[in-house]
Length: 191
Length: 191
Picture 1 (tube, rainbow over the protein chains, first blue to last red):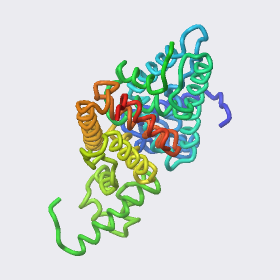
Picture 2: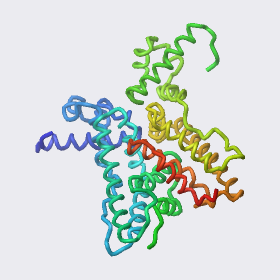
Picture 3: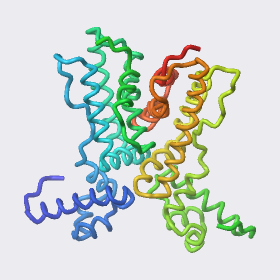
Picture 4: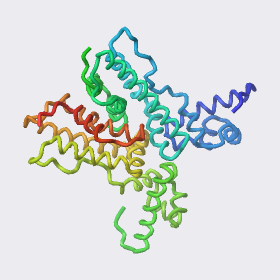
Protein backbone atom coordinates (compact mmCIF):
# COMPACT_ATOMS: atom_id res chain seq x y z
CA UNK A 1 0.00 0.00 0.00
CA UNK A 2 1.16 3.60 -0.56
CA UNK A 3 3.06 5.30 2.26
CA UNK A 4 0.84 7.37 4.52
CA UNK A 5 2.53 9.97 6.67
CA UNK A 6 -0.43 10.73 8.91
CA UNK A 7 0.98 10.06 12.41
CA UNK A 8 -2.30 8.42 13.53
CA UNK A 9 -2.10 6.00 10.62
CA UNK A 10 1.54 5.24 11.41
CA UNK A 11 0.60 4.61 15.05
CA UNK A 12 -2.26 2.26 14.25
CA UNK A 13 -0.20 0.38 11.66
CA UNK A 14 2.55 -0.14 14.25
CA UNK A 15 0.03 -1.31 16.85
CA UNK A 16 -1.54 -3.73 14.38
CA UNK A 17 1.84 -5.12 13.29
CA UNK A 18 2.92 -5.63 16.89
CA UNK A 19 -0.38 -7.36 17.70
CA UNK A 20 -0.14 -9.76 14.73
CA UNK A 21 3.34 -10.83 15.81
CA UNK A 22 2.29 -11.28 19.45
CA UNK A 23 -0.74 -13.36 18.46
CA UNK A 24 1.31 -15.58 16.14
CA UNK A 25 4.04 -16.13 18.70
CA UNK A 26 1.72 -16.75 21.65
CA UNK A 27 -1.24 -18.54 20.09
CA UNK A 28 -0.29 -19.67 16.58
CA UNK A 29 -1.40 -18.71 13.07
CA UNK A 30 -5.08 -19.54 13.63
CA UNK A 31 -5.19 -16.66 16.17
CA UNK A 32 -4.12 -14.05 13.58
CA UNK A 33 -7.65 -12.93 12.65
CA UNK A 34 -9.08 -9.43 12.16
CA UNK A 35 -11.21 -9.74 15.30
CA UNK A 36 -8.34 -10.78 17.55
CA UNK A 37 -5.87 -8.34 16.01
CA UNK A 38 -8.35 -5.50 16.59
CA UNK A 39 -8.83 -6.58 20.21
CA UNK A 40 -5.11 -7.04 20.87
CA UNK A 41 -4.02 -3.79 19.20
CA UNK A 42 -6.82 -1.55 20.45
CA UNK A 43 -7.41 -0.46 16.85
CA UNK A 44 -10.91 -0.58 15.33
CA UNK A 45 -11.75 -3.64 13.27
CA UNK A 46 -12.59 -1.50 10.22
CA UNK A 47 -9.11 0.03 10.31
CA UNK A 48 -7.51 -3.41 10.47
CA UNK A 49 -9.57 -4.49 7.45
CA UNK A 50 -8.68 -1.29 5.58
CA UNK A 51 -4.93 -1.86 5.90
CA UNK A 52 -4.96 -5.67 5.50
CA UNK A 53 -8.17 -6.83 3.83
CA UNK A 54 -7.36 -10.56 4.03
CA UNK A 55 -6.28 -12.64 7.01
CA UNK A 56 -3.38 -14.19 5.06
CA UNK A 57 -2.03 -10.62 4.70
CA UNK A 58 -2.19 -10.22 8.47
CA UNK A 59 -0.28 -13.48 8.88
CA UNK A 60 2.31 -12.39 6.31
CA UNK A 61 2.69 -9.13 8.26
CA UNK A 62 3.27 -11.12 11.46
CA UNK A 63 5.93 -13.20 9.76
CA UNK A 64 7.69 -10.44 7.82
CA UNK A 65 9.58 -8.92 10.71
CA UNK A 66 11.12 -12.13 12.02
CA UNK A 67 14.73 -12.43 10.82
CA UNK A 68 15.06 -15.71 8.93
CA UNK A 69 18.28 -17.70 8.54
CA UNK A 70 19.54 -16.88 5.06
CA UNK A 71 23.24 -17.79 4.85
CA UNK A 72 23.69 -14.11 4.03
CA UNK A 73 27.29 -13.67 5.04
CA UNK A 74 29.23 -14.55 1.86
CA UNK A 75 32.18 -16.93 2.19
CA UNK A 76 35.48 -15.15 2.83
CA UNK A 77 38.09 -16.30 0.31
CA UNK A 78 40.78 -16.24 2.98
CA UNK A 79 39.21 -18.87 5.24
CA UNK A 80 38.33 -22.50 4.45
CA UNK A 81 34.80 -22.98 3.11
CA UNK A 82 34.15 -25.67 5.72
CA UNK A 83 34.49 -22.96 8.40
CA UNK A 84 32.00 -20.76 6.53
CA UNK A 85 29.54 -23.68 6.37
CA UNK A 86 30.06 -24.35 10.08
CA UNK A 87 29.51 -20.70 10.99
CA UNK A 88 26.36 -20.46 8.87
CA UNK A 89 24.91 -23.73 10.22
CA UNK A 90 25.74 -22.66 13.77
CA UNK A 91 23.93 -19.38 13.16
CA UNK A 92 20.96 -21.24 11.63
CA UNK A 93 20.90 -23.60 14.64
CA UNK A 94 20.79 -20.63 17.02
CA UNK A 95 17.95 -19.06 15.04
CA UNK A 96 15.97 -22.32 14.96
CA UNK A 97 16.23 -22.30 18.74
CA UNK A 98 14.24 -19.05 18.92
CA UNK A 99 10.47 -19.45 19.38
CA UNK A 100 9.61 -16.79 16.79
CA UNK A 101 11.80 -18.36 14.08
CA UNK A 102 10.34 -21.80 14.82
CA UNK A 103 6.84 -20.31 14.68
CA UNK A 104 7.51 -18.60 11.33
CA UNK A 105 9.29 -21.53 9.63
CA UNK A 106 6.70 -24.14 10.63
CA UNK A 107 3.83 -21.76 9.77
CA UNK A 108 5.45 -21.15 6.38
CA UNK A 109 5.85 -24.88 5.63
CA UNK A 110 2.24 -25.50 6.66
CA UNK A 111 0.49 -22.46 5.15
CA UNK A 112 2.38 -22.83 1.84
CA UNK A 113 0.32 -25.95 1.15
CA UNK A 114 -2.86 -23.86 0.77
CA UNK A 115 -1.83 -20.24 0.25
CA UNK A 116 -0.11 -19.15 -2.96
CA UNK A 117 1.50 -16.11 -1.37
CA UNK A 118 2.99 -18.23 1.40
CA UNK A 119 4.10 -20.78 -1.15
CA UNK A 120 5.96 -18.09 -3.12
CA UNK A 121 7.64 -17.00 0.13
CA UNK A 122 8.59 -20.61 0.96
CA UNK A 123 9.94 -21.14 -2.53
CA UNK A 124 12.03 -17.95 -2.46
CA UNK A 125 13.45 -18.90 0.92
CA UNK A 126 14.30 -22.46 -0.16
CA UNK A 127 15.90 -21.35 -3.43
CA UNK A 128 18.00 -18.65 -1.83
CA UNK A 129 19.39 -21.04 0.78
CA UNK A 130 20.04 -23.79 -1.79
CA UNK A 131 21.69 -21.44 -4.25
CA UNK A 132 23.99 -19.76 -1.70
CA UNK A 133 25.12 -23.06 -0.20
CA UNK A 134 25.50 -24.81 -3.53
CA UNK A 135 27.53 -22.05 -5.17
CA UNK A 136 29.92 -21.80 -2.19
CA UNK A 137 30.38 -25.59 -2.26
CA UNK A 138 31.10 -25.66 -5.98
CA UNK A 139 33.75 -22.98 -5.63
CA UNK A 140 35.23 -24.99 -2.75
CA UNK A 141 35.28 -28.15 -4.88
CA UNK A 142 37.02 -26.31 -7.74
CA UNK A 143 39.63 -25.13 -5.26
CA UNK A 144 40.17 -28.71 -4.05
CA UNK A 145 38.76 -28.11 -0.58
CA UNK A 146 36.07 -30.75 -0.83
CA UNK A 147 34.84 -33.67 -2.91
CA UNK A 148 31.07 -33.30 -2.85
CA UNK A 149 29.01 -36.37 -2.06
CA UNK A 150 26.34 -35.42 -4.60
CA UNK A 151 25.86 -33.00 -7.47
CA UNK A 152 25.14 -30.18 -5.06
CA UNK A 153 21.39 -29.98 -5.63
CA UNK A 154 21.06 -31.98 -2.45
CA UNK A 155 23.36 -29.81 -0.33
CA UNK A 156 20.67 -27.73 1.37
CA UNK A 157 18.56 -30.79 2.19
CA UNK A 158 21.61 -32.67 3.53
CA UNK A 159 23.00 -29.83 5.63
CA UNK A 160 19.90 -27.91 6.73
CA UNK A 161 17.43 -30.83 6.81
CA UNK A 162 18.90 -32.49 9.93
CA UNK A 163 18.89 -29.18 11.85
CA UNK A 164 15.37 -28.36 10.75
CA UNK A 165 14.12 -31.84 11.73
CA UNK A 166 15.88 -31.64 15.11
CA UNK A 167 14.36 -28.22 15.84
CA UNK A 168 10.83 -28.70 14.53
CA UNK A 169 10.06 -32.43 14.86
CA UNK A 170 12.36 -33.56 17.67
CA UNK A 171 12.20 -30.21 19.54
CA UNK A 172 15.68 -30.78 20.87
CA UNK A 173 18.82 -28.64 20.90
CA UNK A 174 21.16 -28.72 17.91
CA UNK A 175 24.65 -29.49 19.20
CA UNK A 176 28.06 -29.24 17.51
CA UNK A 177 28.08 -33.00 16.81
CA UNK A 178 24.93 -32.78 14.71
CA UNK A 179 26.38 -29.77 12.87
CA UNK A 180 29.61 -31.70 12.24
CA UNK A 181 27.66 -34.71 10.96
CA UNK A 182 25.69 -32.41 8.63
CA UNK A 183 28.95 -30.91 7.32
CA UNK A 184 30.38 -34.41 6.74
CA UNK A 185 27.23 -35.40 4.85
CA UNK A 186 28.08 -32.78 2.20
CA UNK A 187 31.23 -34.54 1.08
CA UNK A 188 34.83 -35.38 1.95
CA UNK A 189 36.63 -32.29 3.21
CA UNK A 190 40.34 -32.04 2.39
CA UNK A 191 41.00 -28.76 4.18
CA UNK B 1 -15.71 -41.08 24.46
CA UNK B 2 -17.63 -44.31 25.20
CA UNK B 3 -18.75 -46.38 22.22
CA UNK B 4 -22.27 -45.60 21.08
CA UNK B 5 -24.02 -48.18 18.94
CA UNK B 6 -26.94 -45.98 17.85
CA UNK B 7 -26.67 -46.13 14.02
CA UNK B 8 -27.56 -42.41 13.73
CA UNK B 9 -24.68 -41.54 16.03
CA UNK B 10 -22.33 -43.77 14.05
CA UNK B 11 -23.45 -42.10 10.83
CA UNK B 12 -23.01 -38.57 12.10
CA UNK B 13 -19.60 -39.39 13.61
CA UNK B 14 -18.47 -40.81 10.28
CA UNK B 15 -19.75 -37.75 8.41
CA UNK B 16 -17.99 -35.41 10.84
CA UNK B 17 -14.72 -37.33 10.62
CA UNK B 18 -14.81 -37.31 6.82
CA UNK B 19 -15.55 -33.56 6.80
CA UNK B 20 -12.66 -32.73 9.16
CA UNK B 21 -10.24 -34.60 6.91
CA UNK B 22 -11.55 -32.96 3.76
CA UNK B 23 -11.34 -29.48 5.29
CA UNK B 24 -7.78 -30.05 6.52
CA UNK B 25 -6.62 -31.44 3.19
CA UNK B 26 -8.30 -28.82 1.02
CA UNK B 27 -8.09 -25.67 3.14
CA UNK B 28 -5.62 -26.24 5.97
CA UNK B 29 -5.92 -26.50 9.76
CA UNK B 30 -7.51 -23.06 10.23
CA UNK B 31 -10.55 -24.35 8.30
CA UNK B 32 -11.20 -27.16 10.80
CA UNK B 33 -13.75 -25.27 12.94
CA UNK B 34 -17.10 -26.40 14.37
CA UNK B 35 -19.01 -24.09 12.01
CA UNK B 36 -17.30 -25.33 8.86
CA UNK B 37 -17.34 -28.98 9.93
CA UNK B 38 -21.10 -28.72 10.58
CA UNK B 39 -21.64 -27.14 7.15
CA UNK B 40 -19.41 -29.63 5.31
CA UNK B 41 -20.81 -32.73 7.06
CA UNK B 42 -24.47 -31.74 7.09
CA UNK B 43 -24.56 -32.52 10.82
CA UNK B 44 -25.93 -29.97 13.30
CA UNK B 45 -23.40 -27.74 15.02
CA UNK B 46 -24.60 -28.88 18.46
CA UNK B 47 -23.87 -32.49 17.55
CA UNK B 48 -20.37 -31.58 16.38
CA UNK B 49 -19.76 -29.80 19.70
CA UNK B 50 -21.17 -32.73 21.67
CA UNK B 51 -18.73 -35.22 20.14
CA UNK B 52 -15.69 -32.91 19.91
CA UNK B 53 -16.09 -29.98 22.29
CA UNK B 54 -12.81 -28.28 21.29
CA UNK B 55 -11.48 -27.38 17.85
CA UNK B 56 -8.10 -28.95 18.58
CA UNK B 57 -10.01 -32.25 19.04
CA UNK B 58 -11.55 -31.79 15.61
CA UNK B 59 -8.09 -31.21 14.16
CA UNK B 60 -6.72 -34.27 15.95
CA UNK B 61 -9.63 -36.27 14.49
CA UNK B 62 -8.74 -35.03 11.00
CA UNK B 63 -5.13 -36.07 11.48
CA UNK B 64 -5.71 -39.41 13.19
CA UNK B 65 -6.72 -41.39 10.13
CA UNK B 66 -3.77 -40.39 7.94
CA UNK B 67 -1.17 -43.19 7.92
CA UNK B 68 2.12 -41.72 9.10
CA UNK B 69 5.57 -43.06 8.21
CA UNK B 70 6.66 -45.05 11.24
CA UNK B 71 9.48 -47.41 10.17
CA UNK B 72 7.13 -50.13 11.35
CA UNK B 73 8.48 -53.06 9.37
CA UNK B 74 11.19 -54.50 11.64
CA UNK B 75 14.58 -55.29 10.07
CA UNK B 76 14.82 -58.84 8.74
CA UNK B 77 17.92 -60.55 10.13
CA UNK B 78 18.56 -62.25 6.80
CA UNK B 79 19.04 -59.06 4.76
CA UNK B 80 21.63 -56.30 5.22
CA UNK B 81 20.45 -53.46 7.50
CA UNK B 82 21.38 -50.91 4.83
CA UNK B 83 18.66 -52.42 2.63
CA UNK B 84 16.13 -52.13 5.46
CA UNK B 85 17.10 -48.46 5.92
CA UNK B 86 16.78 -47.88 2.17
CA UNK B 87 13.37 -49.55 2.04
CA UNK B 88 12.07 -47.57 5.02
CA UNK B 89 13.41 -44.24 3.70
CA UNK B 90 11.95 -45.01 0.27
CA UNK B 91 8.59 -45.70 1.87
CA UNK B 92 8.87 -42.50 3.93
CA UNK B 93 9.75 -40.55 0.78
CA UNK B 94 6.67 -41.92 -0.98
CA UNK B 95 4.47 -40.99 1.97
CA UNK B 96 5.93 -37.46 2.17
CA UNK B 97 4.90 -37.08 -1.48
CA UNK B 98 1.23 -37.52 -0.54
CA UNK B 99 -0.69 -34.28 0.09
CA UNK B 100 -2.44 -35.64 3.20
CA UNK B 101 0.81 -36.79 4.84
CA UNK B 102 2.45 -33.42 4.08
CA UNK B 103 -0.61 -31.66 5.49
CA UNK B 104 -0.54 -33.72 8.69
CA UNK B 105 3.23 -33.58 9.31
CA UNK B 106 3.51 -29.81 8.79
CA UNK B 107 0.33 -29.18 10.80
CA UNK B 108 1.79 -31.31 13.59
CA UNK B 109 5.13 -29.45 13.61
CA UNK B 110 3.30 -26.12 13.65
CA UNK B 111 0.43 -26.85 16.06
CA UNK B 112 2.77 -28.60 18.54
CA UNK B 113 4.25 -25.18 19.36
CA UNK B 114 0.98 -24.06 20.99
CA UNK B 115 -1.10 -27.16 21.73
CA UNK B 116 -0.01 -29.64 24.39
CA UNK B 117 -1.96 -32.51 22.86
CA UNK B 118 -0.34 -31.95 19.48
CA UNK B 119 3.04 -31.62 21.16
CA UNK B 120 2.58 -35.00 22.85
CA UNK B 121 1.66 -36.51 19.48
CA UNK B 122 4.74 -34.90 17.85
CA UNK B 123 6.97 -36.15 20.64
CA UNK B 124 5.62 -39.70 20.41
CA UNK B 125 6.12 -39.72 16.66
CA UNK B 126 9.68 -38.35 16.88
CA UNK B 127 10.70 -40.77 19.64
CA UNK B 128 9.28 -43.83 17.91
CA UNK B 129 11.12 -43.05 14.66
CA UNK B 130 14.38 -42.24 16.48
CA UNK B 131 14.21 -45.34 18.64
CA UNK B 132 13.43 -47.76 15.79
CA UNK B 133 16.17 -46.39 13.55
CA UNK B 134 18.74 -46.11 16.31
CA UNK B 135 18.21 -49.63 17.64
CA UNK B 136 18.44 -51.18 14.15
CA UNK B 137 21.65 -49.23 13.52
CA UNK B 138 23.22 -50.31 16.78
CA UNK B 139 22.52 -53.96 16.06
CA UNK B 140 24.03 -53.45 12.58
CA UNK B 141 27.13 -51.87 14.11
CA UNK B 142 27.53 -54.79 16.54
CA UNK B 143 27.31 -57.16 13.58
CA UNK B 144 30.03 -55.21 11.74
CA UNK B 145 27.72 -53.94 9.01
CA UNK B 146 28.37 -50.26 9.66
CA UNK B 147 30.58 -47.84 11.55
CA UNK B 148 28.19 -45.13 12.68
CA UNK B 149 29.18 -41.52 12.10
CA UNK B 150 27.76 -40.44 15.44
CA UNK B 151 26.48 -41.97 18.67
CA UNK B 152 23.16 -42.78 17.02
CA UNK B 153 21.10 -40.07 18.74
CA UNK B 154 21.51 -38.12 15.53
CA UNK B 155 20.46 -40.91 13.18
CA UNK B 156 16.83 -39.85 12.71
CA UNK B 157 17.80 -36.21 12.11
CA UNK B 158 20.54 -37.21 9.64
CA UNK B 159 18.47 -39.71 7.66
CA UNK B 160 14.93 -38.32 7.87
CA UNK B 161 15.79 -34.60 8.10
CA UNK B 162 16.95 -34.25 4.45
CA UNK B 163 13.82 -35.99 3.16
CA UNK B 164 11.54 -33.92 5.38
CA UNK B 165 13.25 -30.67 4.31
CA UNK B 166 13.07 -31.65 0.63
CA UNK B 167 9.34 -32.45 0.92
CA UNK B 168 8.16 -29.61 3.16
CA UNK B 169 10.52 -26.69 2.51
CA UNK B 170 11.82 -27.34 -1.01
CA UNK B 171 8.56 -29.01 -2.19
CA UNK B 172 10.53 -31.14 -4.60
CA UNK B 173 10.61 -34.89 -5.26
CA UNK B 174 12.89 -37.10 -3.16
CA UNK B 175 15.01 -39.15 -5.55
CA UNK B 176 17.21 -42.20 -4.96
CA UNK B 177 20.37 -40.02 -4.86
CA UNK B 178 19.08 -38.03 -1.89
CA UNK B 179 18.09 -41.28 -0.15
CA UNK B 180 21.59 -42.70 -0.84
CA UNK B 181 23.21 -39.52 0.53
CA UNK B 182 21.03 -39.76 3.66
CA UNK B 183 22.07 -43.41 4.12
CA UNK B 184 25.75 -42.46 3.71
CA UNK B 185 25.36 -39.69 6.29
CA UNK B 186 24.60 -42.35 8.92
CA UNK B 187 28.07 -43.89 8.76
CA UNK B 188 30.42 -46.04 6.70
CA UNK B 189 28.65 -49.14 5.45
CA UNK B 190 30.78 -52.30 5.14
CA UNK B 191 28.04 -54.56 3.76
